Length: 165
Image (cartoon, rainbow, N blue to C red; front, top):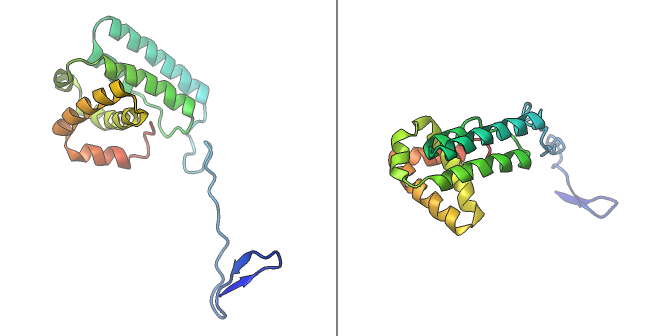
């Protein structure tokens, strides 16, 4: 039954004889949320690792090894991080690696299946940018990745809550 409090706001009370409902608890949505206890504990360490990865990545690109550069970019993605700096820094490295790939078919001949799911997550991030060259490249890779890994790769990447890109 609906009644009104003194302040004029509606109050939803249970019917006579029924158990009162406990108050609604709000979940905090910040980086130190209980759902992600170790996430973002040391953001500076994560940023430092991404910078080191970026240096290795640059070396591989200069040696004309784009697939190895992509593997390096995909390795060690920050797990469960909610910090946008970490996500953006890692995305920049992965984006540059994806854009450096010229032979998509050849890439999948040397890319290990363990990278497929995280690559799919980054492809969706790339598609969300709306940037035409990025979207074109992401769609090319997505098509080949779906052929190679199957539809399960798409579902796993969408359901994955550990790797937040």
